[in-house]
Structures are given as C-alpha cells and as structure tokens.
Length: 153
Length: 153
Image (cartoon, rainbow over all chains, first blue to last red; front, side):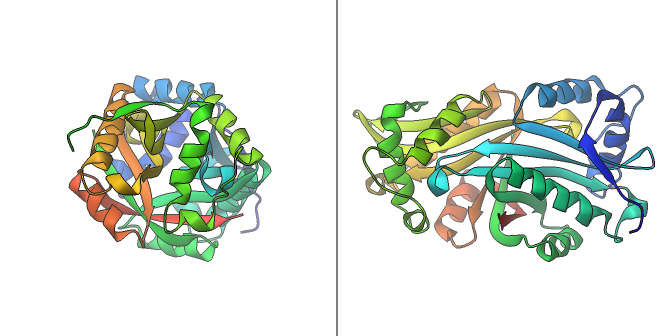
C-alpha cells in the first residue's frame, strides 16, 4: 500500500473506533457491545491496560482515522533461560484495508516493539476457524507450533 | 493422591528447584541451564516477575519439597467486552508425581486464582508434540480451540 500508517499507543478518545474494529469481525460481532459512549466495562478495561506497564494497546492511524488495533503484552518468564515473551492479542484491520499490506505493516511494527523490549520470542494464538489469519501469520514468519487451549470461567 | 500439595508464590530460594523442573522435560532440557547458583539470567527474570503485579510465579510443595511450578499472568483486554484473561505458562510437575492427580490439583488451583482475579477465561498453549498434555488439559475442561504461533527474534 502506498499511504503510510502511523502506529501509536491508544488514547481514551480512540476507544469507540477500537471497539468498532473488534466488533467488525466474524467472531467479534457475537461478543462485543457497540454503544456511544462505550459500555463502562470497556472503559474499566482501558484503564487497567494503561495502569499496567507490561501492556500496550496500539492503534494504526491512516489520514487521521483509526484503521487498526492490537494489544501487546511483554511477559517476563524463567523458561528458555529467563526469556521475555512478546504477546499479541486482539488484532484487527479495517475491512477496506485488508489484503493490501496494512496488517503486515502493523504486525512488523509490533514485532519490532517486542525486539526493542528484549523479547526473544513473539507469540499469539488465533481461533482454528481463522484460516486466512493462519496463512497471514505464516507468511510473516510465525510457526504454528502450538495448540491453544481455553477454558471459560 | 493422598498427601496434600501446598501452593504458594515462589521465593528466590526456590529458583534452583524451579529451574530443575523446567529442565526435566523433553523440550526443556535443550534450552535450560542447570548451575548452582543459578545463571544470572534466571535471577534477572525472577526479579522481573516479582516486580510485575500481573505476574505470579507459583510452586507446589509436598513435604517441604518443591514438586511443581507454573506461572500465572493476569491480562486486561478490551475484547469480549473488556474481559480479563488468566494465562498459564511453564507448567511442570516432578516426574515421580505425574499421572496421579498432582498436576490436576495444581491446575485447578491456578484456575481458581484466575477466577478470584475476575478473569473470564483461562488460556494456555502447549507444543503440538505434547500429546499427553493435550489430553490432560482437555480432561480439565480446556478446549483446543486455537492455533498457537511463535516467531523467534
């Protein structure tokens, strides 16, 4: 893509646009709540993310519009001789920008952030049904080496 | 199993026993370093975990001996209407206690911690080669709904 994306930490004013991106998705539309102002649970979650220096909620901006989002977590651990892990969650790109390299730009930027923080691995999981996402991450050098298990509480 | 396990936050003095557990594993033995005192990278990682209130490094103790370990991470996020996730990493149980319910006790305790912290889901990944672990987690009510991708830096 020709126009350049800007990546930055999200502000509270970005919250409606981020929630709209989370909801504009085959799985997300079942589980997100669109309202203006945002549901108070999103505001509480946003504040919890901001209060935790290991978390970074990110937006991609194009010509002043929020067109992408993801959340980075930097996780210290003992395994692999005391390695840090970068973890990526809740990745979304606006529908109009899918398939033209915007997602790739955003992920490469996120991987670079993990490298800067001293992480030796970047990890993420995607639902088994997201076969497009699987191809996308493999193209970016991610190996589908693990199974991801979830238990709802 | 009849004897009862005690679960608690790890102390620095537990570090050699935890590293020994991490290394006593088909994949772990290739990537951990056993030394006394522990390699300085483990000490730095231990301090980073202790400094982060979202992380909790846990040991299981039986008759004064460390016989199990795992790391809990509590991750705030916007997805699923602002849900917290509990994440479990680096799970190990001493070889002598495998297959007799000790791992199950430890995981159920960990899930209860996530519930107490208000998480609505508990997540973990395991290497695709760990077929015993896959059966273990499914028995505990975890669904293998996701693929886990890693990219080494």
